[in-house]
Amino acid sequence: MIPRHLTIATRASRLALWQAEHVQSRLRLLYPEMQVELLKLSTRGDEILDRSLSKVGGKGLFVKELENALLDGRADLAVHSLKDMPVDMPELFELSTILTRADCRDAFVSNHFETLADLPEGAVVGTSSLRREAQLRARFPTLKIEPLRGNLDTRLAKLDGGYYAAIILAAAGLERLGLAQRIRHRLSVQDSLPAAGQGALGIEILKQRSDLLEILAPLSCHETTACALAERSVSRALGGSCQVPLAAYAAIQGQHLTIQALVATPDGTTIYRAQATGLVPEALSLGLRVAQELREQGAAVILADLAVASESNTP
Image 1 (tube, rainbow, N blue to C red):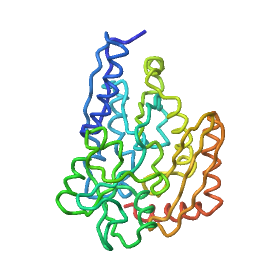
Image 2 (cartoon, helix red, strand yellow):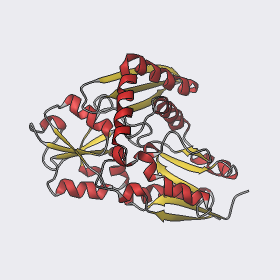
Image 3 (cartoon, helix red, strand yellow):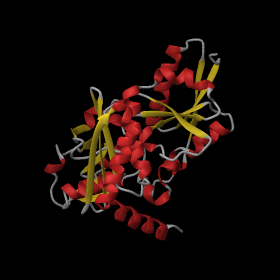
Image 4 (spheres, rainbow, N blue to C red):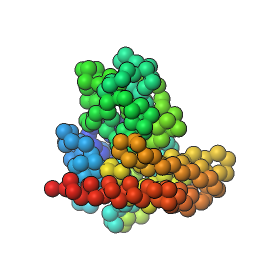
């Protein structure tokens, strides 16, 4: 039975609203008689801007308030950027739907330079991600990498204000807000392996709301879901969080899925990489295989060291 009304919980940033409105418009097209409204919320991740995510609690800061809205009945579903969704979700919730992925690559944004290679020694590059930072430091050790927090407009304003020579952002976010012209160069996945789920949108619901599964099913993308399953399985197996420079990217060609992943030290001096290919239905096991290979190479030592450092930094 199609409900007469649905409420979507969303962060209040311009990009988050675009994502929620995209799901809203898709649902309205599918079910013209159904009212679909947005519940706009501010999260701790949006409010704490003076410290990096790795130091203030990680990706969960962007979802907790939305999950509370699902629990208390103010909303029926929540829309997230999939890369911001923790891989270990609370027991009461489930990731019901993954939509077709947009461009998963990282984007080089600068007002004066065309590529990273054009930046002079000591140039300041802003990024909010340890994953990006580690890969940048490995390729360009003479650059100065500085933290960059805030919503997309805030980050671009800091670049325009001269605080950075360049910044690295997700290409999908810029495209979704009509800002693709700000992209000077799209980094290849070989040069900057993306975060698990980057470029995709995920819908979260309460597990008990099984009535929503059939309604949301038409929004699901089979290929993106398989890729995300592989990528998130790597992250889950390795305890992936904002404290870990970890990347995972899967792509499908024909009947086969290839998953690439890496774990690095934050300074980029050590990077372990692994890759596996198999049939698409093997997505989960392929991700676990890659995670195990990374551990055997030496990633387990990096993960243990980062866990100790994280505990020592906890108040």
